[in-house]
Image 1 (cartoon, rainbow, N blue to C red):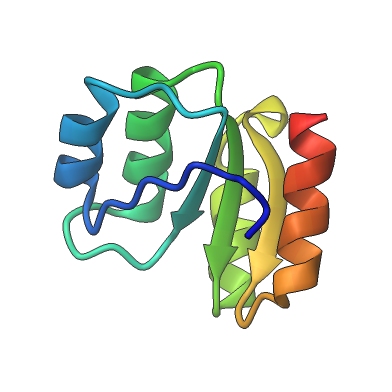
Image 2: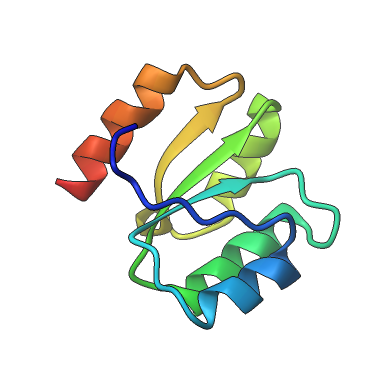
Length: 98
C-alpha cells in the first residue's frame, strides 16, 4: 500500500540467492531462522548488502538485545519486538528511507 518493493526470503541461504540480483535499502531480519544463529545471520546480511539499513525483529526481547550487543552498533538501525504494529514499521521505514 505504501509503494515499498518487498522481497522475502525464508532462510539465510535463500536470502543469499535473492541478494545476488537485488540490493535492498532496508533488511528486516527475523532472528528465528532455522539455518543460522542470529549473529551468523547478521554477519551474512552485512557481507551481502553492507549498505542496507538493518532492522532486527524477534518475539524474544533477550535475543534482540543479545544479538544487537554482539555486533557493531552502527550495523543495526532498530530492534523491533513482535508483534510489530504496522504503523510503527511504516513510520520507521519512512524515516530510514527519507
